[in-house]
Amino acid sequence: MKKAIIIGAGIGGIALAIRLQTAGISTIILEQRDKPGGRAYVYKQDGFIFDAGPTVITDPNSIKLLFDLSKNRMENYVNLLPIKPFYRLYWGKEKFLNYEDNIKDLEKQIAKFNLNDIKGYRLFLNYSKKVFKEGYLSFASKSFLTINDMLFILPKLIKIKAWKSVYSIVSQFIKNDYLKQAFSFNSLFIGGNPFSTSSIYTLIHALEYEWGIWFPKGGVGALIKALIKLFQNLGGNLILNSQVISIYVNNNKVNKVHLKNGQIFDADIIVSNADIINTYRNLLGQYAFGKKKYMNLIKKKMSNSLFVIYFGLSEQYTHLAHHTIFFPSNYKKSIENIFGKNFSRDNLSIYLHSPSVTDLSLAPTGCSTFYALIPVPNLSNSSINWSEESIKLKNIVFMYLEQYCIPNLRKKLITQRIFTPNDFKDVLGSYLGSAFSFAPLLTQSAWFRPHNRDKNLTNLYFVGAGTHPGAGIPGVIASANITAEIIFNDINL
View 1 (cartoon, helix red, strand yellow):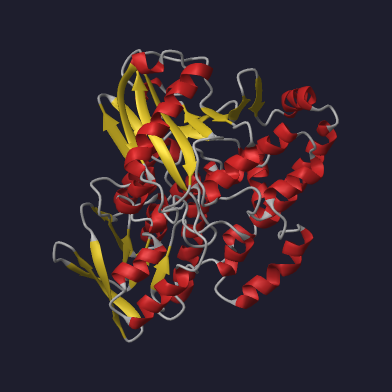
View 2 (cartoon, one colour):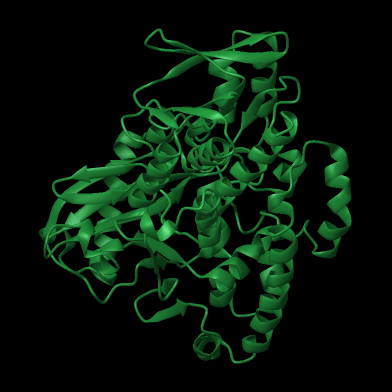
């Protein structure tokens, strides 16, 4: 029986482990933290449950398939709850839009902004559906190991005008400035600047429209538990508190990993679900090719980082939406704030996650669990002192939320914790504290993104946000599917 080791228990790594174990490959996941999940880690504090990372599930079928492979029923492991509306978008106190898949209701809301944009929205939705068909159902399930793979899809990329940005495509169809923001912000969920991210990522709108937005009962942590339970029921082995410090190479093949505690594990197949740049720098840096690959990868543009406040309040707030986006007064300046070099506290965008609206079990009786997230620059902007900035940003966020949706927030505050770009670097091992790995530019997508298998080491593979197709829960699960197929082909399974 072939043996595989997966370094890191993020969603992509777990999804791949399930596929390998189902196929009869003896698989071990080595996770350096005390719990699985990676960016989807869970914090429990003062009776509150905080999902640390991704909270938006847009392709429930990709999760269901992981159970179907072994003839298990997803419903026996985890229950996904539909979220309505998908998002509530605010511009100030009075102007808002409930972003949803009910076309009649959505068009009524669009009419309040600009009656003429109803027709434009319909045209945009049709465009997004076409891109979804090519960019997700086709591109995101295909490996890009050779330049010929990229050349094959080039005509389709030209057809959908993939060189244009998300915002410029939306602007072709929609004229109202608020609505342009409403239908272009989604790319921020995968670390993309709407003004420079390829229009391929307009597919996110159709993806949400097609399959909805879901949330696991018990939080995203309940989904992680379910996937790990499935993996272990299939005979897989998860070993926690196991930090890999090096990967050994022999005759152009990887064959062993060395743990910080001195243990050595050998394997026929090694997969990194860790940060790709740090995989080459830290785990393969003892070899000349590892240093060279690292130096090449750091030339790429990294995505932004995030500032997150997790907090619990002594009251329930039924008037809130599960997902709320507060747009700044100057959208373009806000985006420049996130992706540029001159960060300021003006024109901040705030995403408020309110899971207790959907699932009361995530907080003590009569209480509510939240996190508020601000997209911020990664650590290439070294002028920001995050120890000092954290206090200032937290106060701004709490004051804003008190003014617009949660009066007396600080009087109701029971518990809180903060996660900064420094934590993305130090806790999650993300290069420059990037929250989504490489920025989703056209020149960093598909074949241009780090491949799912190393070019020279024929049994070293990658899974997760840093490889094709990219970040987000659907993206990393798709990367697991692609990597699994490459492995199966390589070993003639």
